Amino acid sequence: MALKDLLRVADLGLADLRHLLDLSDELRSEPYRYHDLLRGDTVITYFAKPSTRTRLSFGSAIARLGGTPEVVGPTELQLGRGETIEDTARVVSRYARAFVIRTFADDEVCRFADAASIPVVNALTDLHHPCQALADLLTLRNHFGQLDGLKLAYVGDGNNVAHSLLEACALTGMDIAVASPAGFEPDAAIREAAEKLAAASGSEIVVTHDPFAAVRDADAVYTDVWLSMGDDEAERSHRIAALTPFRVTPELLAAASGRCVFMHCLPAHRGEEVAAEVIDGPHSVVLDQAENRMHTAQALLLALLRGELRGA
Image 1 (tube, one colour):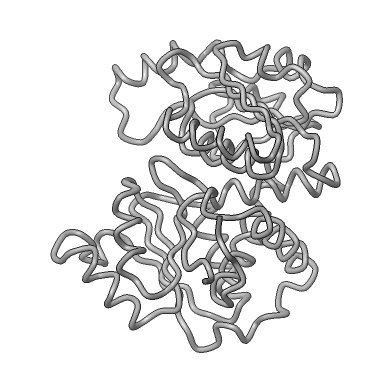
Image 2 (cartoon, one colour):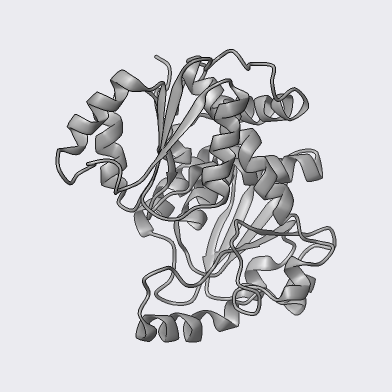
């Protein structure tokens, strides 16, 4: 059976992942080749939190497939408020061809997908950011020509981006090292699942508290913001104190491979998780990552709607 939804990178098989990357490259060259796929149809994109790249990349992707993106949030839908998540999912399935959701709890997305008869895409939750990881893999493949043999180092908070990168690298056979301070490591269950994937692909996964050890010989150094909206002052102070030694500086980048690129999913806070001279310097590919969010979003919607993915 075809894979209906994408809720995390580990939902995909290696053949699915390669197909999505190939399709993304095809759509970069011919963005309107499938402009009739969604003609006259709607894709609903739901955002429980503000968004720049996810909202605009999916909006552009839907338009390039000939559809209309209907953007809604908590004040427009009664999702989990005035009615059950399941009822909302069943109703939305009668109106739209797909549902893209950016929210907080993974359980809400899983419940929605289970009840919906249309494809559901996790556009970010507390634990996973699969759409970002797809764009990151595309960026690396386009830059280096292949993914085989690459090492990615993720430095900082072991968050949803780190989780999806763990799964993506393990699936493709890339090595990944994650350096986080004590108490900020990736989720243990997600790491364990990624290690099982890595055992099959030959990928090496390392989790350490030493950022210089993590970036040694890395082809890509990746980081993400330290602070989230809603953090109180005490939490902010705690996080900054713990994560400051993990800032990506020119000195840290110099410890990586000579061909290393710098990656960030954006938005970035210069002077916090990354020095300005790194993110704005010659090694940075952050704008390529941002553009590739659109190409991979279009490829993902196209593949799900045409039933081309088979799953893990």
